[in-house]
Each structure stands twice: as C-alpha cells, then as structure tokens.
Length: 297
Ligand code: ATP
Image 1 (cartoon, protein in one colour):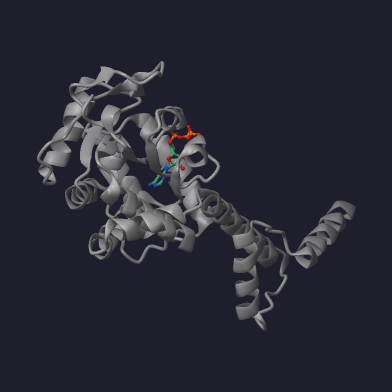
Image 2: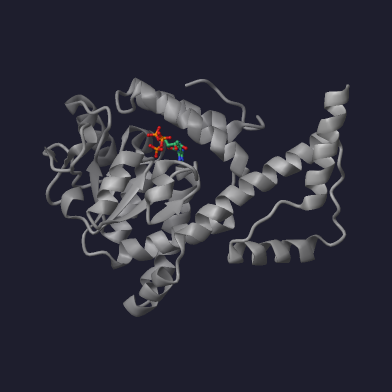
C-alpha cells in the first residue's frame, strides 16, 4: 500500500482507493470494480463528501426495515468486501441479517476469497457458494441461494447493479441500496436509496441499531410507513445542484449573501419537502448575463 500522509487534503478518498486496490490484489474485487469506485468518488465529490441529512434519514429507515424483516439478507460484492468487511459482519450480527456473496463478474475463486475475508472478520456463515440461477437475469447476478436472497423479504444491496435491483423489486422484495449516484437505475428503483458512501453509511447505521432495538415493532413500522424515497432522491439531487451553483458563483466571484442564511435554509427545507425546488432566479440571471459576456469576448 502507498503511504498516504494523514494531513493530505484528500486522505480519506486516497485511502479508499488503496483499499479497493488491495481488494483487487487479494482477488476479491474485479478490475471493473475500480471503475465503479471512480464513478462513486465523482458523485461523492458532488455531494460534498459527507452524509447529508436525507441519507441519514434513509439509513435510519434501513435499520428499522432490517430489524423488522423476517429473512433479511445483506448482499456482498467485491467492492463492499474490500471497503468495509468488518462493518458488514457487524451489521449482519446486530440485525440478524444473513450475508450472501453475489457477483456480476462471478468466479468461484472470487466467491471463496470474499467468503474467507468475511469469515476472517468474524462472520460465522456466509452464503453464496451454493447459488443457483434463480433470478430472471441473463448474467451471473442471477445466481442466488434459495434460503438467502431468493427467500429474503428485505435485501440490503450496497453497490448494486440496476438490473438486479429492479428484478428483486419485481419479486416483491424490499430493496435497500447504497449508491452515491442518485441518478443510477439502482437508486431510482430501490425502495430505500441511501445516497452516501458505503464507508460512512455502515458505521452510521451500526451506531443507530441500539436505539431502534429498544423500540417496539409498531413504532418501527410507523417510521417505515412515513418514509418517502422520492423526497430522499430529490434532496440528494438538490444538494448536488446547490453545491454546483455555489462553486459556479465562487468561480464567477459572486459573493454569498449570509445576512438571512437561517431564513433561507428554512425556506429551502420547506420547498424541498413540498417537492417544488427551483433555482434562485437572481443567481440564474447573473450566470446567464455572465455567459453572454463571455460569448461577446
Ligand atoms: P446502474 O446499473 O444502477 O444504473 P451503474 O452502472 O452506475 O448503475 P455499477 O457500475 O454497477 O452501477 O455500480 C457502481 C455504482 O456504485 C455507481 O453508481 C457508484 O456511484 C456506486 N458506488 C461506487 N463506490 C461507492 C461507495 N464507496 N459508496 C457508495 N456508492 C458507491
């Protein structure tokens, strides 16, 4: 592993790259997984490399669903195993969810290596090696275990591909996805879309478990029933828009008006809730005028 100085401004992101690289070296992660990581990083940059409030909410609902489920399963791929093996095992132990390895670029060797990694991190049983092609898909993700993903009522799918996410939904399973890209087919088709980095989402979910474990089922259902995934997706897209607009203003030298920041924040939260999000017309006008100036030059 390359030595990354702790004070490097992109320390976390560079360390994550090292982890994915190590996953490839260990034979768990596919080379395509490196590209998937890159796409995730780009969206993390746009989100602001932090757990936004709506993602925190989705994570809470995901914990409630895992605790309520009769046969919850955590689906593990090569990237997830490289990034957070210990946290996946802890989440499984604390919620009673089974762990199952399921790969797009499936080889028996990679399945075995990921199972070994999860066991080294404390897992007792890991499904995946006795998988059969039970899902209506043309690729290797179709292979699942009967008492695992096939029979699951709630499935937690970090870093999923959109195809399988849709198929699982069609099979009337509740799907929780972790995907930094709110535009992906996965995020758009999951029931609970956690738009957050897996490395932040898992520890956050683990921290929440004791509180929810103390609640009764009726209260947990109330939280789940009040949830609206559209609001969460819209909020993630809005956050990206806001971050881009702020950057655009910075480049154009447009100063931020802090005078009524508190009020503005409250109004924006209100607008978001109502799903009527609009760009600030004043800023839009300034940007358009500036664009026209640049064209004249
Ligand atoms: P889809 O098939 O759902 O439209 P895709 O083709 O982009 O999506 P893949 O390439 O199969 O999906 O998977 C990569 C996805 O995982 C990307 O959407 C990326 O944003 C996301 N991703 C990658 N790394 C992380 C991470 N560490 N945390 C959360 N999401 C991540």
